[in-house]
Image (cartoon, rainbow, N blue to C red):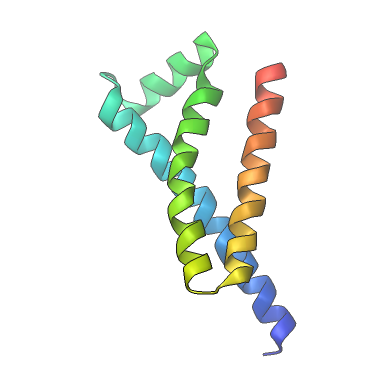
Length: 98
């Protein structure tokens, strides 16, 4: 396996890790702070226009893998996390204005 394909694989691993961390953050936030179930909370959030805020709050968990990858000097993983964070932020911004 050459270095370039390993870099792409590490980058994709970081990207997927960040998306999973964001989803876990959303679920954790709902479980801790909502009196309703996950589906009902997400439906209410969409209907009342605060789904983007819940997704943004879920993004707090992305800090953990990002700094772990940096500490381990796994820069390609960290770049994937960074790109995923940017994609999530853009998606939330688009959702908010549509």
